[in-house]
Length: 310
Figure 1 (cartoon, rainbow, N blue to C red):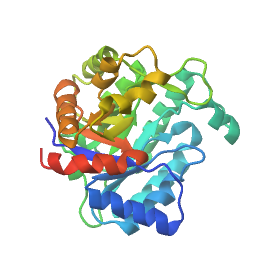
Figure 2 (cartoon, rainbow, N blue to C red; figure 1 turned 60 degrees about the vertical axis):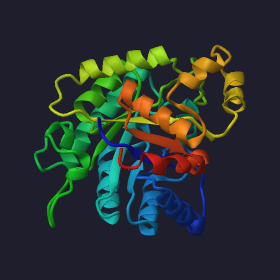
Figure 3 (cartoon, rainbow, N blue to C red; figure 1 turned 45 degrees about the vertical axis):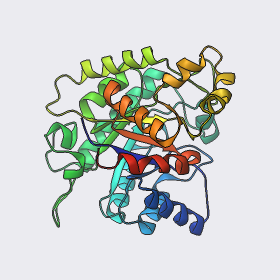
């Protein structure tokens, strides 16, 4: 099993001082990665990460995840190369297809079918490999070559491959992550059919098992396994877990409280109880890299210290 890494996805816009302060706070709490998503109304990923680099020393910096439909691959390659240079080689590039139709309509961009969105992402990954990876590393990057992402930094004057994270749930996305990514990211949720605003609903624990089994079939030929990431939806340090999950149950009535608390995306209880849940998720699913959302940064920060080094 891989050692734990922990990331926080910063989703709330802020002025320069407030942005730097919360990035420094994430570093103080022990987060290994500061992440920015790619949604309209949230911070623009690349300038936000450059600012985060200037405010911190240790954390890596990642997009979580870029909506490939927003990007022309050649222009994206320029953004990636510049951001990686300005952050001192700390960038991790996360890519996905995008799932919010309303954002594409607001931006005046085609949304397309699921197949078309995956096709565009496949082309984007291929172009980025061509434009950004002159070192000869194979598809799958450092992991496929037997090198971990953190070992991929080049020496002075050398080009390096930015570690690639791919997030998704469908079979084609799982195959892409298995074949090309250093980090395979799972949300353990799916889009609500017919929603244009990005409404999501959780998978059951059994459905997560099925998605993980499919991923591992696709990844069977890898010489080295990828790092597995999970986006956690709720963290609550509390002596009353039932109260913490009650709002979720109101939105997803098909789940019982027991079923909801079994999900690895729901972490509620005392710090030690949550640590036990995190260890159990790594044991059952292989998730060693967990990401929490900004509203849960402080609560999960109470958990991190007790898992450091495991």
